[in-house]
Length: 252
Image (tube, rainbow, N blue to C red; front, side, top):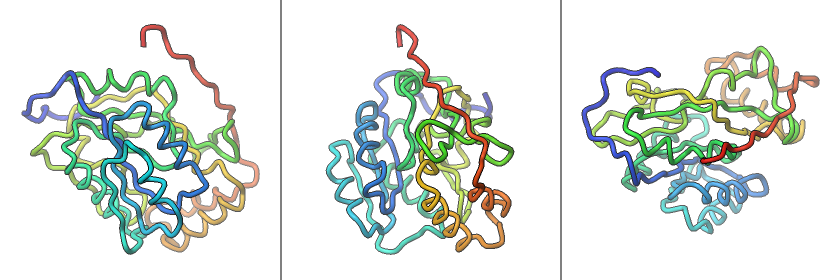
């Protein structure tokens, strides 16, 4: 647990609404439809910002009954990621949320995490929770683990309580901005052992090459992430570990 003196506002400990927030761009033919169906099984609402997609992404989002707000950018903001994150947060605020779950368009919460979600949001002690995110590589069966790819060893804050009147702010990072406002960390929170499966790198080597080229276009000097990390995207023989599913404990 970490954080300062709790922000002085009553915390609801039952009946809280869970809102997933997500930014998307050109997700047709990837994971979006499956992800929206999966999210719909355990969240109450979904808020999305589309970053000027040129395919059927917007139509796919509109087809989901859980999507209650969809913001469509006219111009792409990939090179100014913090503005995208902030835009998404502001859009979610308009829906009067209780808890916000940050999800990327290629991320899936494991069954144990989905089963635990209501317990996490219907308590009064913590205002955020962190999860372990695993980067699947080249398939849906193995994740990458080495000196540069080990995000799952330090949990990522992805679930936060919304407190009206609290100051939520993102650092002005052009790339790799945190998925939730940095000021959430001043509130009491907890790390969990619950896991997220990230399939952003699970595609072909050609797809990873395109992502590498995109990162180098926007961050050629390695200002927002090390050049060594970018170069490792092209590693032909990364260290991979087989993913093991976990059962759900009785009573969950």
